[in-house]
Image (cartoon, rainbow, N blue to C red):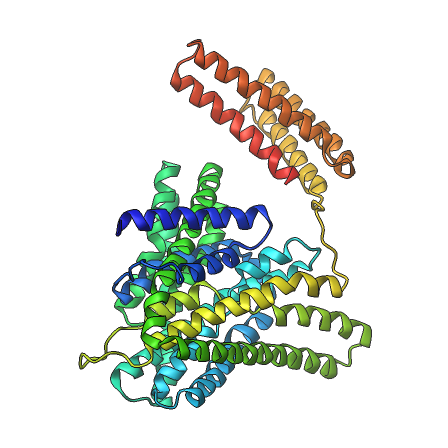
Length: 521
């Protein structure tokens, strides 16, 4: 058995690994990377041959778009200097230093490949780190910085990667030309991102059907990326800027049902993409190890560990240097600096590499323009995968221990939304009065709406009193809804209602249940 049946089985296993991660509160990238590593030891699995150019085109646009959609624009801009310090400065420094280390370890390979490798492993992935941090009472500013860094450093690293690959294929490299192209690609990518962000997202908001709007949202990152690629500028930056604009328009220009469907659908799609990439690397590993020979693979595993240690040290020094400089320049009291050093320690340790690095490594071309094999491609992919494994295991699994050593407590506390909810209800009541005075609603409708929102207000007061009691009322409501669902199924099985009516009523119960579940989980 080979081909698609094997791939479907592996995809099913990958999804199970995601489920295990979610069940045991382990970030699913960690379970996937371990699963990908295990694939390399299964005999008989055939290496998949693919067009490397398609990897970046298929995988990166939706991942970057989703990440941009998920971040708060307001918090992102508020912390933009800290984000850029990491996403621009640290990525450039890491690319350069790792490139030097690679050249020292592998002097037979060209400088362009060394810096391509540096660019591949320079951008951290915040998915695993933020999944862990959200379990603790962490300052939301730290989460914003890490998510913002992950977003922009992908763009920085991939622009550097593209320049290095161009130099690798051309056989020459000029710092002046590369710097000019870097600026040109960045400015062009931002411009196309702004233009496409407003045009495509506003066009999507005009769809009458929420389903069509969500389906079109999957085309948006690919259109932005392709447009930037056509003009030979940064498609990555175009997608990121497009997503940042789209995240704002999603709040103001889209129907609520569209937002609900979009988030659920995109969550599923991103998990599938992650599974796909880690399966792909798993199927490559066996062939790569065979071509490298076992003895070299063992040596390169040690090299990967050294490079991982170097990258963690670079990040540590970079973050602490900025923190120390701020404290000294502003003459800040020591207690404040100690608090900031705790935050700096957390940021320093959140340097796990992930899917973007893996996709970039797999996207390296197989051949040079003259038809000969690209030297060092297998080495780069092998080192990249091991660095992802090391950073996930070392930093990812030890991060909770670091947080506890800094006296950051794990929490299941739910943020109090009672006050803003009450304000929204008062706004609704005020609008009801305006509608009545404008004679846009009848007296009967006015009384109904007023009663409805008064009941909502009372429910909020009851709910706020239950916060410290683990939400017993919400739990009781879930039991009531479960009984309603069972009775609905009984009516359907007895043919008291048809399929269409059953689906309608079940959808109403699902929405009611999900609103309560979100308050508890």
